[in-house]
Length: 429
Image (cartoon, rainbow, N blue to C red; front, side, top):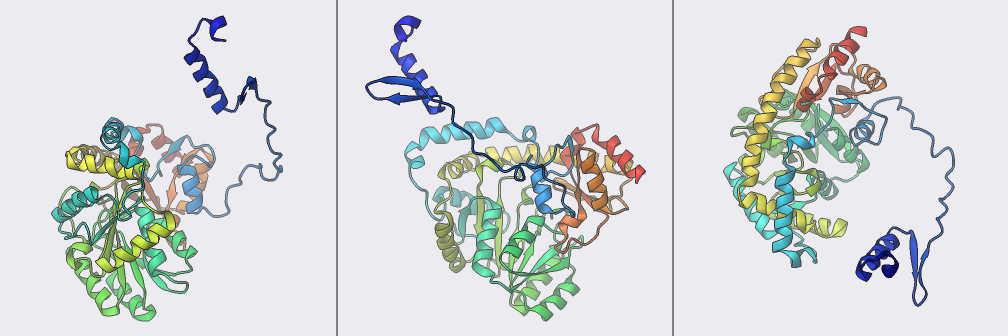
């Protein structure tokens, strides 16, 4: 082949190896390379291949399918839980990956530290310290494969079937499904602008003796609200009085411009477990999350992490360490916040033009919680039929209670055709 084609033998051998890797040819030692017969695909029952029908009730699984591109064809979306790729900095992340691969090749060949990269934990401890959360890198911190992984580990450790867990309403839909999978008894606490409804929280804590309370304190999903100081103090007081732990989800806190109240700061990680990560602000594909808790809980959570999946990928941790150490993440965050803040005001203006009401303009974050004045699930269903993805308020309730609210992602402002389509849809109903 090399002689007839006038090519180097090495070039031909590499070509053969690529064809073999793709399953197109096979090698017979001593005989040569031969074309591989095409493999017969397994016969799949027709019922399995039938197109999914729209569920009788829109749920979080439906939303996730649509968001991640495995559902029906969506042309316009206002319901994504993440920012578009071009709002983030792919070159920054790619450069950090290349630099990390050059400087720590040996580390990529081994499992990482069970607790997470020591260097990364030191930088995170410093960052948390600037936010008022005193955390020792060796005793209070561990890394996870994102915030969802961190929350899952905490639920595995602390929640047994039948245990009562309090959640916010509205709140993050994914957590409702996770709690149900562990057999927890889920009870909702209404979320107000300054924090959870404290009267309801105390009444439920007295009646049900909860094991855990999950709260999204800073830049709440879906409302964008941030916990006030007085409410934070009362939440901790009730946790002490009724002996329950608090899982503080800090996923969107980096979108907050100023100093914000964190329960973990006020509590000094005694009753509060703090989880955060970088998927929303930097790169979801890195899967780097952080968990801060008191030392005895961290030790038990590390054991669970080892049993569930050994160590978290070292490459992502090395990349995050470099970005934090060299100040790249901080500068990126400033640029991203500015873009998000500008888009949020434009999003609110567009929603009001379409006839929706925004009861409160959130000061930070990538979401706007808007009132469409009618059953939002019916609106979302009609939108889906028209190729538009909306997130109805029913999804953000643990009981899927009827709601007139819709959650919008501020990056939707870039889709000029979305707004007239939305306005037309609402007028027709």
